[in-house]
Image (cartoon, rainbow, N blue to C red; front, side):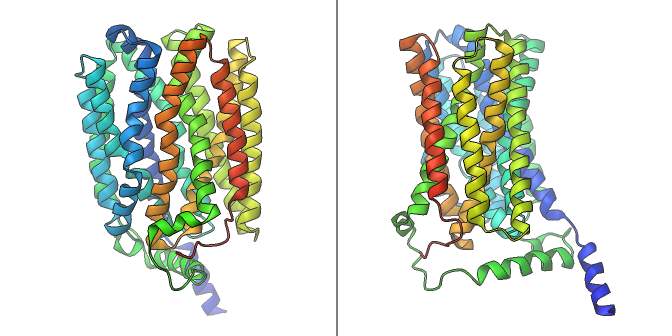
Length: 432
């Protein structure tokens, strides 16, 4: 009995540094998306200043993703071979520097160059975050860890809409907004370096109870890892689950990035929103996505801790998310009332962002020394979408004069997300 009481006391006394680190990641990813979203929000002003047509706007909006996508797998390999702490902190400082440089641009070509630099610097952040999820979280906490990591996307987009529009209103220019957000990001990178560590035992704030809790949870998981692995990364692409993960994340990001890059302009042109209304509506839509992301993570961990298998949990949640998000975005194309359109867009993001749970998949399919690579491969698929979708939407709008066909494209991609998510076997590690 005494031993049992001691064990209970030890469990109750464990620290919660792992959650503080993932709240830090949430903050960093939020800043990431504030910096990304700043261009989308400011684009109506930049387009007038630099005399950019919709096709040129689409090229500049997509340019970030050229280098970002190209460096996903190298960034994941860096996280596997070195340590997540230096990768995350270094990436944050450098992308803040490129955001600062953007405020000095005087042409579309110069702005495009800074977006290429921003994409290159941000590339390792998600694979390194996925690596931290495999190191710091037990299997019953991975859902919340994944959605805290990915939740910064809608939260940053929401805050970016308000912050950037407010700074533009205060200063009468988009340039101070870029300067302030970039400088703040560089300071955040230094903050990450000072607090983040590569493993629980390295962190001075982690007591033995928390470290032992994490290690015991992961020991059980590691018993099920395949033996005799080759370590050849290209062998991953022999497996259906890896390809389904790749294309599923591509479909998800196609819809999200399409809304991130073009929704402010859509609201301006189709529903007549000025810069103030546009910022408020964008905040509401993307904050709904943030709430949805945390909701999905909580449901997944709660359901998993009850003993449900990963296949049942994730296939069910992804199916619900894909079906409702697709129905909502389809309805947007017929919405004539601005308030109804914003409500439907909010519904789309609330359910779509449940798919932030995709960041559980690299640790479910791979062993610990492969998570960075798998996260990079997954995010490569997602950011091929980032390269193509802004350009495709720009061309559609330029040639048709409306957003109807662009929204129908998002509907098709929602169906693709559903099919790919069901095709993944979440309970079998890939024997590579």
